[in-house]
Image (cartoon, rainbow, N blue to C red; front, side):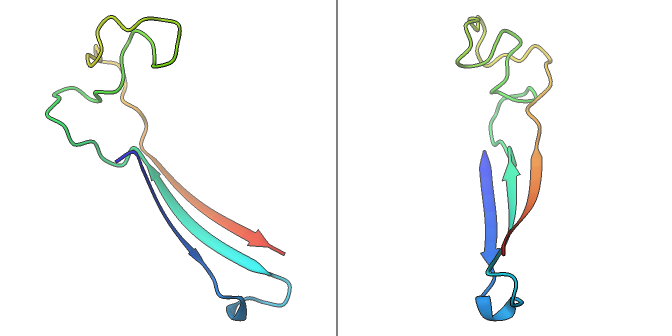
Length: 80
């Protein structure tokens, strides 16, 4: 699961007179990878990334490189 996001926009009747819109959200990146691959991450490789000019001579083999980071993002959007 690469991206998962949850959000909630509050009703205008719950907000104060100076706030016209309020939204809270939570986003996860690289939350879970389900595979039979025995390494850390089947998407990384020591020899370049997708879209780069370097050619990946061993796709799917990570050679012990670090896996992609797992990110948890909390956000708040306020419109006055």
